[in-house]
Image (tube, rainbow, N blue to C red; front, side):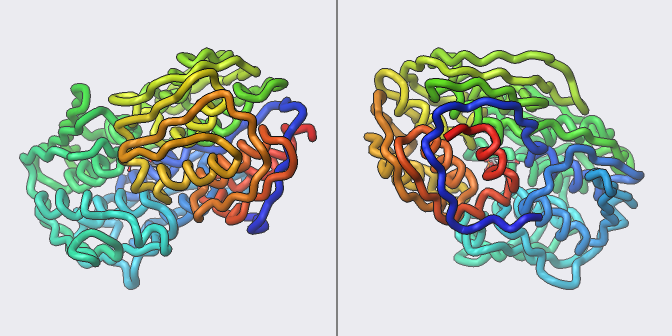
Length: 436
Ligand code: S3P
């Protein structure tokens, strides 16, 4: 992977034009490796996201004994030998910056005999794991963590998961749901997860394709483990809508823009950003709609638009959770106020994104109020260039860069290398589509 300078400058762009094939979906890439490592058979993963986060998952799986090879054409081959092909690692499992790696792998090791210790970088070691420690203990694993069971490292003695249980998750989190379902695969009965709202369903789709019984009723998921191991399946990873969102928002709010984003995953449980921007009046067209590897995919054509403010809350929040900082930016350039509520989960991401979004957007001269459960942004802003810091959060780095494209003058983003966890080519794509 290329090394990204820690400080990047962005000039206000006169025009935004071009086509971008955004990199593979991060959530699907993690799952394609993890689930196939647990399965029996050979699987090819095409369109895999090559980034720091997904490499953390790959390294941890190898440490658990999985056989994973990369081909010269960018595919990844997983040779699964079933659950028995995975075993206790001889060292701690380092999940880097990746909450998805830690929480999903916790579900896997909870179902494996032996001890596992999961740790990560400073940011990840500051993120709550109580949300998986509690349910995995209830399922029968022995799980402890630093700071009274709340922070990594997380220590798991796995291998005795009891079936027939129903667990309610207090927060809408696909990672928590997935940890429970993955542990449930090791049980000898069903496992039911009841969420406050539906969350991204990549886990359900892939487990069903691999032979598990998965019954979904709105926010409730009932898993029946397969007889024996999961069956390996090839995965074609769609483009990541969370990554595309940076360009979607940039194009809609820029006065002279037309961008084509190719092969973007538009799964209903992820496409809240499209619904939000359309409600704001965005000129956003879906073309070439198709199904790729069991996931709906489309090309997106996005043009300069006149936006009006909006209110975002309720069930829409988990469908757009990683895009909400960009929604706040769109709101600043819309007419009227934009309010994001019911989004307290923003506070426990790679950074406290209520605070970091507030800090970044204020630096550009935007009026923004940080609330317990979200943000309120005044529209009609005119952005002035700023120096902003990513707080080691990839999505905050991209937010600062997109705001820089829309501001007069030269913006500096420090901690710019953070984009490598999900989009290593971000800065070069930005250069390619913008005319200064
Ligand atoms: C993810 C789920 C979401 C999202 C994260 C990836 C996943 O987190 O914010 O970037 O792959 O399951 P939560 O489960 O914490 O909501």
